[in-house]
Length: 171
Image (tube, rainbow, N blue to C red; front, side, top):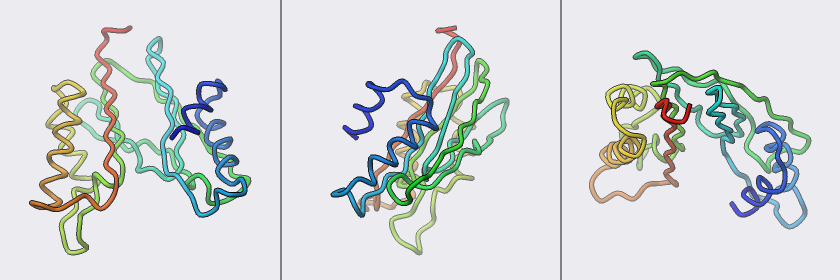
């Protein structure tokens, strides 16, 4: 995480170039067998728009006008393969839009036979929560993920939820 933060502060690259550079950094000698799945996005409130590149992170979900659309940004996790180049997408946003970034630990079950929250159920949940604040949505997503894990079960993986909600206040 320190590598990403430091690099982002020192180099003002777009998301795709940032992932390419970080991939090269993770392939340095001494860092073998390490990889990172992440989505790197830059929000521009002037648009408003979101520019996004992805390296193995679950597709972010755009909630707009009562519909859920996975943002089609994909890529190989960082640190696995040399000479990777990442694609970047730009999404023009509107007031009322919500973009949810949820790690696979939010969507996966604790045990193979358990039901998973999954992308489809997550999208349905986001539709019911879209009137709440971004913080309230993130908290509700984590609570729902807990229900799918089962009482007393520890998450099998990290769980990260980032919610971007376009309110129009900063436009």
